[in-house]
Image (cartoon, rainbow, N blue to C red):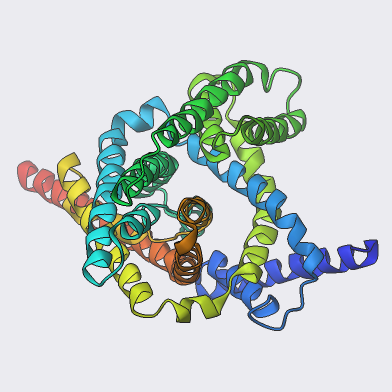
Length: 407
């Protein structure tokens, strides 16, 4: 790409992001949905205005943006937060993963999808989009316990999903007459290696960052940590999402002298997110959603139902407030990159079904990326409003009791 075209493209994309941000503030529509919509309009499914060379940046931008998101989500996994909300985070995330696999697999098998492929699609259904969910929560402005739990759930959701997918692949091969246990070893390395890498970067990072001087140096330190985590994770063949999350969690728990690394990433994250979501939207093929037909519609319906049931069951087992239980699944509908990555792996293992698996995953991702952030914002705001009313009622009741006692 020529230098002039590069600057024109970047300028136009940033201005489109600014427009989406302003429309989102005035209409309360999710910025993520608006950015994806902009990408679809100017991308291959729309007017095809983005130069093909611009898509070369998508890999770098997606890795950078998602590692930043994972780093920020890791900050929610502090000892204090886990002590308050850890039981809910673990139960809800685990139940959503298990029920998604079971319900989607059985449902697709009943309508004629071969059992191995149905099992793989059930595992793909477990993936959640951390970037869209995190931005929707931030845009909602909610600060209560529910939003903290959603952040924690999203932070560990991909770990559960990767483990479930790896196990599902082994069983799918078994159903097809082949067994490949080496895939379990690969999954163990991808998850365990990412956790180890996060510790390796996070422990010294917790003690060394913020020591040089107050202010600006911490921004370069925070960026250095994020890029180092992403680069080493890719080099080692482990999950950069989990590595970024673990790095953030370690720093949040052990850096007693500052928490500015997270503020600095929050301040510089949005430009990366603008380009990431617009280019993601430009790469989405809306036609594939229509091509999935009955199977695609069934997958969408079953994934939504599984999230609702999983959120309710997990919240009930964890003893979460009754008013929150129905909304966990609603808040966790976005689906994106991790699901497509799983679909690519599934396609390599079952090449005859590769086009079907990838088309269905990409097609349904279009829908979940457009409606998911809307659902997240609605759920978080709904629960926040309920919590505020309940808190106000308790205060009013307490004042009335005190007044009655004084009389």
